[in-house]
Length: 88
Image 1: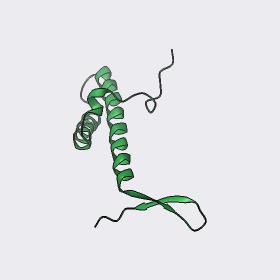
Image 2: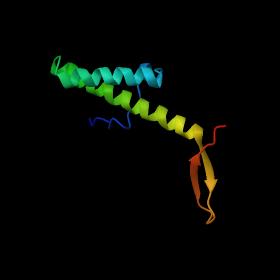
Image 3: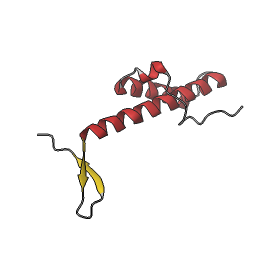
Image 4: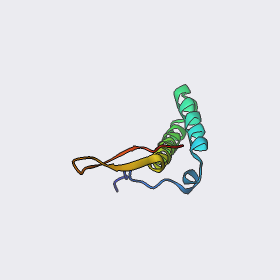
């Protein structure tokens, strides 16, 4: 049975509930742990998989934030684009 690509697998609910800051802090902790080579191989694999999900969650949160501050524009030739919103 093929394993789904990490990018296409759903983000676990416990990760989806995390704020960007909490997810990033946990991801940083996992990276440090993996870089130090602590733990068993199975634990490292599980940490890597969780880290991948945390990374995707953080990226999604950043995309959501960017979408909230971008403004859709129409150029002179009729094509669409975005520009940063003016926050006064």
